[in-house]
Image (cartoon, rainbow, N blue to C red; front, side):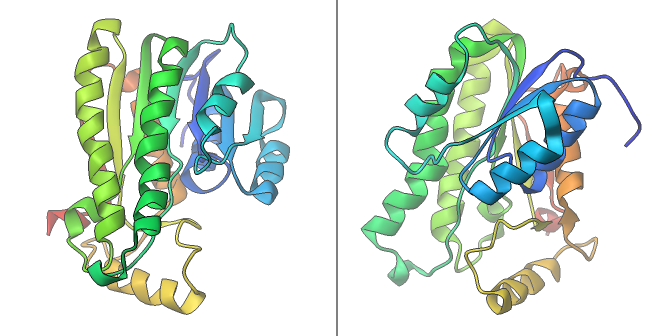
Length: 249
Protein backbone atom coordinates (compact mmCIF):
# COMPACT_ATOMS: atom_id res chain seq x y z
CA UNK A 1 0.00 0.00 0.00
CA UNK A 2 1.33 3.44 -0.90
CA UNK A 3 2.23 5.67 2.02
CA UNK A 4 -0.59 8.02 2.98
CA UNK A 5 -1.42 10.13 6.02
CA UNK A 6 -5.03 9.20 6.57
CA UNK A 7 -4.52 8.67 10.31
CA UNK A 8 -2.25 11.59 11.14
CA UNK A 9 -2.73 12.44 14.84
CA UNK A 10 -5.70 10.07 15.09
CA UNK A 11 -6.36 7.41 17.72
CA UNK A 12 -8.03 4.13 16.79
CA UNK A 13 -9.16 1.43 19.23
CA UNK A 14 -9.26 -2.14 17.89
CA UNK A 15 -10.60 -5.00 19.98
CA UNK A 16 -9.04 -8.33 19.06
CA UNK A 17 -6.21 -6.40 17.44
CA UNK A 18 -3.16 -8.39 18.49
CA UNK A 19 -3.10 -10.73 15.49
CA UNK A 20 -4.53 -11.22 12.02
CA UNK A 21 -6.34 -8.41 10.27
CA UNK A 22 -6.55 -6.27 13.41
CA UNK A 23 -2.78 -6.26 13.80
CA UNK A 24 -2.26 -5.64 10.09
CA UNK A 25 -4.52 -2.59 10.32
CA UNK A 26 -2.74 -1.34 13.44
CA UNK A 27 0.63 -1.44 11.68
CA UNK A 28 -0.72 0.61 8.78
CA UNK A 29 -2.41 3.15 11.06
CA UNK A 30 0.91 3.80 12.77
CA UNK A 31 2.71 4.04 9.41
CA UNK A 32 0.19 6.71 8.45
CA UNK A 33 0.79 8.82 11.53
CA UNK A 34 -1.79 7.51 13.96
CA UNK A 35 -1.75 5.70 17.28
CA UNK A 36 -3.62 2.59 18.31
CA UNK A 37 -5.13 0.99 21.38
CA UNK A 38 -5.43 -2.77 21.04
CA UNK A 39 -7.03 -5.46 23.14
CA UNK A 40 -6.34 -9.17 23.09
CA UNK A 41 -6.54 -12.20 25.33
CA UNK A 42 -3.49 -14.18 24.22
CA UNK A 43 -0.52 -12.99 26.27
CA UNK A 44 1.99 -14.09 23.64
CA UNK A 45 0.15 -12.14 20.96
CA UNK A 46 -0.12 -9.10 23.25
CA UNK A 47 3.60 -9.09 23.90
CA UNK A 48 4.42 -9.56 20.23
CA UNK A 49 2.07 -6.77 19.13
CA UNK A 50 3.44 -4.29 21.65
CA UNK A 51 7.01 -5.03 20.59
CA UNK A 52 6.20 -4.91 16.87
CA UNK A 53 4.20 -1.68 17.05
CA UNK A 54 6.31 0.30 19.51
CA UNK A 55 5.45 3.44 21.42
CA UNK A 56 2.55 4.49 19.20
CA UNK A 57 0.61 1.46 20.43
CA UNK A 58 -1.00 0.65 23.76
CA UNK A 59 -1.73 -3.07 23.93
CA UNK A 60 -3.45 -4.69 26.89
CA UNK A 61 -5.26 -7.80 28.01
CA UNK A 62 -9.04 -7.87 27.80
CA UNK A 63 -11.10 -11.06 27.67
CA UNK A 64 -14.60 -10.16 26.58
CA UNK A 65 -15.97 -13.53 27.66
CA UNK A 66 -15.73 -12.32 31.27
CA UNK A 67 -18.52 -10.43 33.00
CA UNK A 68 -16.42 -7.35 33.81
CA UNK A 69 -14.56 -7.04 30.50
CA UNK A 70 -16.34 -3.89 29.38
CA UNK A 71 -15.78 -2.14 32.71
CA UNK A 72 -12.11 -3.16 32.58
CA UNK A 73 -11.80 -1.77 29.04
CA UNK A 74 -13.31 1.58 29.95
CA UNK A 75 -11.29 1.86 33.16
CA UNK A 76 -8.11 1.29 31.19
CA UNK A 77 -8.78 4.27 28.91
CA UNK A 78 -7.66 7.73 30.06
CA UNK A 79 -10.68 9.88 30.89
CA UNK A 80 -9.61 12.60 28.48
CA UNK A 81 -9.06 10.34 25.47
CA UNK A 82 -11.08 10.86 22.32
CA UNK A 83 -11.35 8.17 19.67
CA UNK A 84 -11.31 8.90 15.95
CA UNK A 85 -12.12 5.29 15.16
CA UNK A 86 -13.34 2.11 16.81
CA UNK A 87 -13.11 -1.36 15.32
CA UNK A 88 -15.06 -3.98 17.29
CA UNK A 89 -13.23 -6.96 15.89
CA UNK A 90 -12.80 -9.48 18.71
CA UNK A 91 -14.85 -12.65 18.33
CA UNK A 92 -14.78 -16.40 18.66
CA UNK A 93 -16.24 -19.26 16.65
CA UNK A 94 -17.45 -22.80 17.01
CA UNK A 95 -18.55 -25.45 14.54
CA UNK A 96 -21.38 -27.86 15.16
CA UNK A 97 -24.74 -29.09 13.98
CA UNK A 98 -28.05 -28.30 15.65
CA UNK A 99 -27.90 -31.34 17.92
CA UNK A 100 -24.40 -30.40 19.05
CA UNK A 101 -25.53 -27.07 20.47
CA UNK A 102 -25.70 -26.75 24.24
CA UNK A 103 -26.91 -23.90 26.40
CA UNK A 104 -23.35 -23.31 27.58
CA UNK A 105 -22.06 -23.14 24.00
CA UNK A 106 -24.83 -20.73 23.00
CA UNK A 107 -24.19 -18.45 25.98
CA UNK A 108 -20.44 -18.46 25.36
CA UNK A 109 -20.66 -17.53 21.68
CA UNK A 110 -23.29 -14.86 22.16
CA UNK A 111 -21.53 -13.40 25.20
CA UNK A 112 -18.37 -12.80 23.18
CA UNK A 113 -19.77 -12.07 19.72
CA UNK A 114 -22.95 -10.14 20.56
CA UNK A 115 -23.28 -9.07 24.19
CA UNK A 116 -19.72 -7.74 24.50
CA UNK A 117 -19.83 -5.57 21.32
CA UNK A 118 -23.23 -4.17 22.37
CA UNK A 119 -21.98 -3.19 25.81
CA UNK A 120 -18.66 -1.94 24.38
CA UNK A 121 -20.55 0.27 21.96
CA UNK A 122 -22.72 1.64 24.76
CA UNK A 123 -19.76 2.34 27.04
CA UNK A 124 -17.38 3.68 24.38
CA UNK A 125 -19.87 5.98 22.67
CA UNK A 126 -18.91 8.94 24.94
CA UNK A 127 -15.28 8.56 23.83
CA UNK A 128 -16.10 8.86 20.11
CA UNK A 129 -15.40 12.19 18.47
CA UNK A 130 -17.91 13.91 16.26
CA UNK A 131 -17.13 12.46 12.84
CA UNK A 132 -15.64 9.22 14.19
CA UNK A 133 -15.92 5.93 12.34
CA UNK A 134 -17.02 2.60 13.82
CA UNK A 135 -16.31 -0.70 12.08
CA UNK A 136 -17.87 -3.99 13.14
CA UNK A 137 -16.58 -7.42 12.13
CA UNK A 138 -19.18 -9.87 10.87
CA UNK A 139 -18.61 -12.90 8.65
CA UNK A 140 -19.58 -14.33 5.29
CA UNK A 141 -20.91 -17.27 7.33
CA UNK A 142 -24.08 -15.23 7.75
CA UNK A 143 -24.83 -15.76 4.05
CA UNK A 144 -23.14 -19.10 3.31
CA UNK A 145 -25.72 -21.40 4.86
CA UNK A 146 -23.14 -23.93 5.99
CA UNK A 147 -24.55 -26.86 7.95
CA UNK A 148 -21.99 -26.51 10.77
CA UNK A 149 -21.82 -22.76 11.37
CA UNK A 150 -25.39 -22.00 12.43
CA UNK A 151 -24.58 -20.70 15.91
CA UNK A 152 -21.61 -18.60 14.82
CA UNK A 153 -23.49 -17.27 11.78
CA UNK A 154 -26.45 -16.29 13.96
CA UNK A 155 -24.18 -14.29 16.27
CA UNK A 156 -22.67 -12.44 13.33
CA UNK A 157 -26.07 -11.80 11.79
CA UNK A 158 -26.97 -10.03 15.03
CA UNK A 159 -23.94 -7.76 14.59
CA UNK A 160 -24.96 -6.86 11.04
CA UNK A 161 -28.45 -5.96 12.25
CA UNK A 162 -27.07 -3.92 15.13
CA UNK A 163 -24.72 -2.04 12.84
CA UNK A 164 -27.57 -0.84 10.66
CA UNK A 165 -29.46 0.45 13.70
CA UNK A 166 -26.36 2.09 15.19
CA UNK A 167 -25.62 3.82 11.89
CA UNK A 168 -29.04 5.47 12.02
CA UNK A 169 -28.83 6.31 15.72
CA UNK A 170 -25.34 7.83 15.61
CA UNK A 171 -25.78 9.74 12.36
CA UNK A 172 -26.89 12.81 14.34
CA UNK A 173 -23.39 12.86 15.86
CA UNK A 174 -21.81 12.48 12.43
CA UNK A 175 -20.51 9.07 13.50
CA UNK A 176 -20.45 6.44 10.78
CA UNK A 177 -21.00 2.73 11.43
CA UNK A 178 -20.15 0.08 8.84
CA UNK A 179 -19.70 -3.67 8.92
CA UNK A 180 -16.82 -5.65 7.46
CA UNK A 181 -17.88 -9.07 6.17
CA UNK A 182 -14.74 -11.21 5.78
CA UNK A 183 -14.81 -14.50 3.93
CA UNK A 184 -11.99 -17.04 4.21
CA UNK A 185 -9.04 -14.99 5.46
CA UNK A 186 -5.63 -16.44 6.34
CA UNK A 187 -5.52 -15.69 10.07
CA UNK A 188 -5.37 -17.79 13.23
CA UNK A 189 -9.10 -17.33 13.84
CA UNK A 190 -9.88 -21.04 13.36
CA UNK A 191 -7.21 -22.14 15.82
CA UNK A 192 -9.89 -23.95 17.85
CA UNK A 193 -9.84 -26.63 15.13
CA UNK A 194 -7.15 -29.25 14.72
CA UNK A 195 -4.76 -28.57 11.85
CA UNK A 196 -6.37 -31.38 9.87
CA UNK A 197 -9.93 -30.16 10.46
CA UNK A 198 -8.95 -26.57 9.75
CA UNK A 199 -7.35 -27.52 6.44
CA UNK A 200 -10.39 -29.58 5.44
CA UNK A 201 -12.86 -26.85 6.41
CA UNK A 202 -10.93 -24.14 4.61
CA UNK A 203 -10.59 -26.26 1.48
CA UNK A 204 -14.35 -26.68 1.29
CA UNK A 205 -14.87 -22.92 1.64
CA UNK A 206 -11.99 -21.84 -0.60
CA UNK A 207 -13.19 -24.14 -3.37
CA UNK A 208 -16.34 -22.00 -3.50
CA UNK A 209 -14.47 -18.70 -3.81
CA UNK A 210 -14.57 -17.36 -7.40
CA UNK A 211 -11.07 -15.89 -7.03
CA UNK A 212 -9.85 -19.34 -6.07
CA UNK A 213 -7.95 -18.54 -2.89
CA UNK A 214 -8.23 -17.30 0.67
CA UNK A 215 -7.62 -13.63 1.32
CA UNK A 216 -4.74 -12.29 3.37
CA UNK A 217 -5.09 -10.49 6.67
CA UNK A 218 -3.72 -7.38 4.96
CA UNK A 219 -6.39 -7.50 2.24
CA UNK A 220 -9.13 -7.55 4.87
CA UNK A 221 -7.36 -4.85 6.89
CA UNK A 222 -7.17 -2.61 3.84
CA UNK A 223 -10.96 -2.49 3.62
CA UNK A 224 -11.30 -1.84 7.35
CA UNK A 225 -8.78 1.00 7.00
CA UNK A 226 -10.87 2.51 4.22
CA UNK A 227 -13.92 2.41 6.49
CA UNK A 228 -12.01 3.85 9.46
CA UNK A 229 -10.58 6.70 7.41
CA UNK A 230 -12.16 9.80 5.93
CA UNK A 231 -11.92 8.12 2.52
CA UNK A 232 -15.30 6.61 3.41
CA UNK A 233 -16.81 9.85 4.73
CA UNK A 234 -20.12 9.28 2.91
CA UNK A 235 -20.44 5.58 3.74
CA UNK A 236 -22.53 4.41 6.69
CA UNK A 237 -24.89 1.56 7.45
CA UNK A 238 -23.14 -0.60 4.83
CA UNK A 239 -21.92 -4.17 4.85
CA UNK A 240 -18.79 -4.61 2.76
CA UNK A 241 -17.72 -8.13 1.85
CA UNK A 242 -14.05 -9.08 1.61
CA UNK A 243 -14.58 -12.62 0.43
CA UNK A 244 -13.21 -13.11 -3.08
CA UNK A 245 -16.79 -13.25 -4.35
CA UNK A 246 -17.84 -16.13 -2.08
CA UNK A 247 -21.29 -14.83 -1.13
CA UNK A 248 -21.98 -13.80 -4.70
CA UNK A 249 -22.72 -17.49 -5.41
